Length: 53
Image (cartoon, rainbow, N blue to C red; front, top):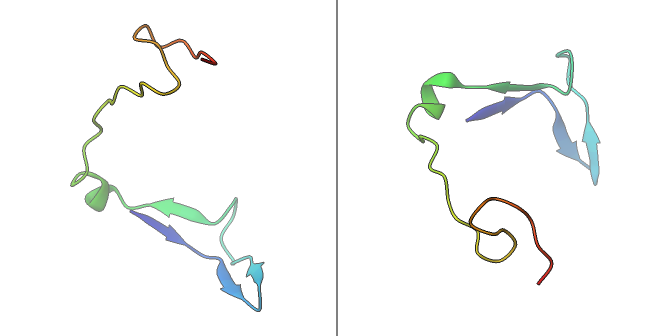
């Protein structure tokens, strides 16, 4: 879903030539994975607030 211009080599991240952080989204691929909201019982209450229990 994402194209990057950076590369990994010798344990380092080498920046690419594109502006910003060098990441572009592929809209055609993203359409194949529609957003589905999930309930995260571990760290959120049903109202959406975060808790530390």
